[in-house]
Length: 489
Image (cartoon, rainbow, N blue to C red; front, top):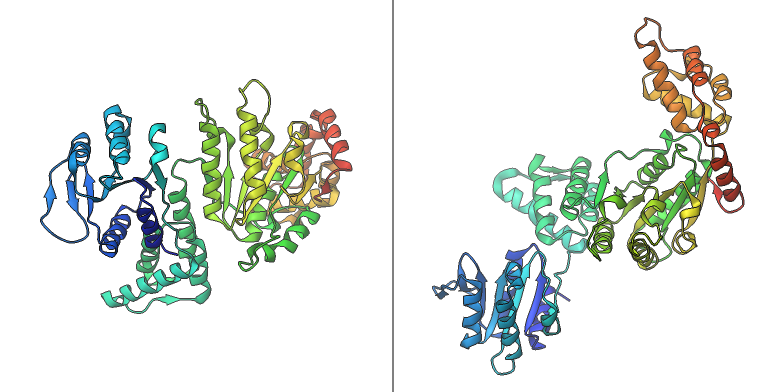
């Protein structure tokens, strides 16, 4: 099945108005030029700058009808039977006269078959026209087609005098995989840029394509691309979580696997326990892009817009697959109280439907601090694979955390008494340990001595750990999680 076949079926179905949402306007015009010759129907294109022109062959046939109402009156009063592409017509659909003229042209299709094709990046028609319309989405190129595009662009580079393209098979495969989800025009442009940069396709090109793909798919900023993914070596403890992810890495990345691939996890734990770092490390271990969904960017004062924004954000994640989608503090985004006029419940419903029905390789990593605000339908198996609890770290994990944060700041952990620091930091979270290291560095910065164990112990003694400051809340969370969650450490 091809785009040309889909469009031919629509034209032969006598649908009077076809809606095409696409940024590939030249490709749409080229498809209809081929189709016009194939089915022996004249085809025209209209734009506000050029008026009405034939598209299936180069000729001087031209009708200067640059005003939208003017061209609709022309078609209504006896324009030639055929196909008419109206480019970027969406701003004029707010005019009642234009809507009425479109309706009359469509209703007169039986006597005068004129098919109107509205082409724009976004087309929303008024309710009174919807029963006269059919939508057609251009197909996105599959992996084989993208490999063909890479071959074509490599050949074009060679013919232009650039020589042969240097490319490792693995880099080409990764490039093709990461271009899934973008239009053919954008895929070709990104391939061309990768080749012309240095006459090669490398791992660096793949990374650049990931960033460019994100910019293409999420121009509104509803979902953010996290460049700073981590490795599990940057995370102290979490042995159970690391082993769980490791067992599922190969099945998640296996493109031939069509079912039962990993879907996601929920990380519950105390604040500062390392949930965000763990989310970044999961994406880093899988070796896929990390997208972050912030519910604060989704909410809109107009009814229905918040849910629409969420659907667009989730669709972006689907197009970026394989990837990880990180929803931080998910309980704040799906509050189901009455004060928001039901927006929270509708958002929750939209999210739950996507979680249950998606068939794309989007691994969800949701984090939460307050279990009481999580609806039970969110945490059931089938929507997530496992619920992990990140507890306060024990002495061994605290010692490992000190080593990681000291090493990250250019200090040798071997020069510190890690067991003593671990003992003195009982009740501290990973974030608290990191802050103690930072504070110790500030404390000795004005002196000539280097930071040592005593400096760190002094900072620990000046700070009350979170387990003391929020003792009641943390103990209640630990009691709830003890029999209900898998311990992450």
